[in-house]
Amino acid sequence: MKLANPLNYPLMVLAGGVVLVLGVRLARVPLAIALPVSAAVSVLGSSTVATRKPPGLDLDNPQLERELTSVKQQAIALSTQAEALRVEASKSLESSEDLDLLTTVQYACDRVLELPRKIDSLSRRLHGGDSLLSVDEIQRQLRDVQRKQIQASGMVRQQLDQLAISLTRNLQLAKQGEDARQAQVTALSTLIVDGAGTLQSLQNQLRTSDFTDSSKRAELQSLSEELKQFQENMDILVD
Image 1 (cartoon, rainbow, N blue to C red):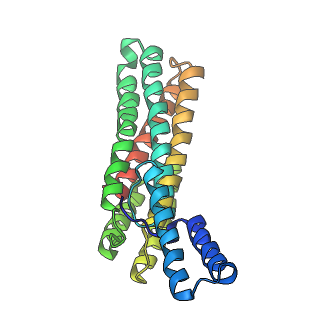
Image 2: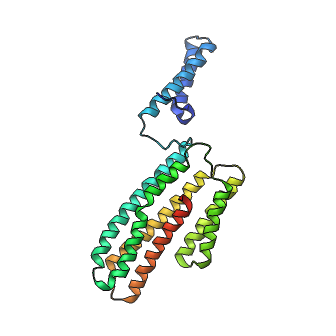
Image 3: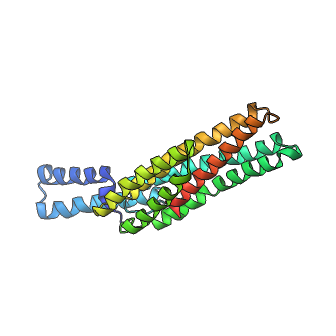
């Protein structure tokens, strides 16, 4: 059985403390004996709990691991929604004049389907307590965003502005020697929420719009492009 760090399991630390107090005060066990016994209870208890938990990400940071697991669940839910939208688009855009629009929508959905795999790849990169994001890496990410901001407008520009703010904060953390991984995962979560909103808007358009109306077709095209931009923004953070 692999030994676990009791500090990651507060209840086991409490159990060790209870054993220490009971041993010293009630059982009159010498402190030199009670301390090792208390530590053993905490370590063995933590290790037992750890072996019963589902395999984790082993990031040496329980809070970061929980947040990254949550992001992975968000990504899976979003990819499921994208697959449903892909199928729905193939039914709604059946005519030959809709082929280009259908291809755009399906391509955007296909990119979203890649998201869970990319989150897995990010998890491997963040593995281990010393896998801190470097200043150079975050600066490269920020330059990519700033380059896109020059040409962007509307909702796409708003997404990029928000991402630039997050990366600037992450850069400051990295320069101070702090762990910027958690802030990076938070930025991912925010992007996924935005992507889910765009995907829902796309779905609503498919269900309610008359695509003989050129303005409605243009709106659907714009939403599809926005969804592709969302995936490109995700790539900046995870690739």
